[in-house]
Image (tube, rainbow, N blue to C red; front, side, top):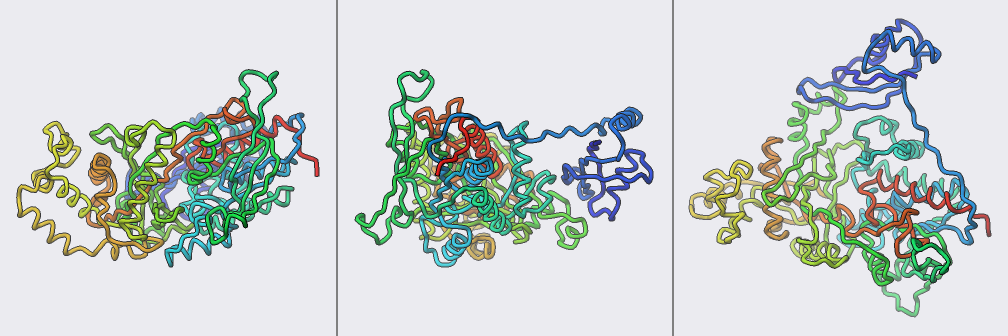
Length: 616
């Protein structure tokens, strides 16, 4: 098999042009061949001249010796022998497993862990506090329409995890040499995802397609011998001391079982405590894959003295723009007809900046042609996320513009301080929006913040040391900051009055009710300045990014878990043998792909130690 890289064709090329390009590159004439696209991306460096760039594997029908001879004759650095790494699940261990393994959480990490365990004979029990996909989708749609939140079934909790109501991006920065990444993509395709995710440089499924794909993976788990229980919460853990003869590196406790409870009771429905039907089940291998929003379960680990570590994450706002503004900047074209002719989808972007404070400001989870969604999971708390359907055709682009935060911003070194920080911001956002998503046009956000803070002595607002180029602090901006000239304020008011309200402007761009609110007062001032500095820098890279068409929504606070659960070399918790922290909630992943890959890794660790489960 021969691999060709850097095959370039103008976007919108005619049918058969790619095969002709392959033949010309290999000088094969009319010889029969077959090819597979391995990688595809769009090269927009010379916009509006755009190119599709491919890597392909070609089956020439020649033997290995003939192909080697062909490569020597071509002397082309972009033509080589294809090197394929095939994924292999480890041989099963020999230690008996008295009870079937339990996986907590049916997000990507839990689903893929349970799938691999089931397919190799371990008959796992997968529990999920939320509801199955069909019911969960109805619950989420009802919440967006009415504002009535079900704490057990929402954008964060339920089959598929938080990734279900997202952009469905499948790119990862994990350097994977094991083949797990390709295996995850193949499983998604086998379950109904588009074939293109196997080769697109920025693969994407879309929330509408994920709603069909995820239940098929669940059925694969069940058909392979696994069991899936929805609306079930883990409320407690039981432990026993480990044998004193075991090695010093082994935790002093070993997990022996779990306490389970129906989710509707655990979440505090009208039922009384006498009606609670707790169930204890024995378990020696438990995969903790609860995601980044199961705060009550993390708190239970803390009470049980399972070691946890405070972890940095990022907070900020969702910023929405008309998709045409982004397409024009990234492609040099924005007309729908031109995009279709060139077979281009809505354009993404990725932006990073460094604020004068030293903090990083960056775009996160960019959703081309998507929606801002109310992603709340706790009563009287509000957070947002981004979501796209497969077609990415909403007409709006959005991404989180976020700032890295840690102990200094939390104000405490307590391991759960980040979680407390999240909750405070989400409570404030809920109050600002009165239960709806608070939104504000960016020019108003910026000017109102500086007007509110004009008398502060904060050196970052008034110091001569501020880099005026980076902050775009021209004379007019300084007047806005300090409020010295009434004419500047009058001009700002005139502009603001002439604009549509952010609430009306974002019609169709937000899933869930939204309300105009003073979002410039939501974050601590230092973080708001970082956000503004980042937006100013991004506005110089994408024309209009910080202009009238930009709308801010908040708060984006669930970018990743605020804690990490340390693991041993065997991937068990350092505080309890048999407990396997996994995925994003445990601090070992940052998206659908990395979470799924970590789930596979945990399945490998369990299977490499234990023999398949065969007891009744």
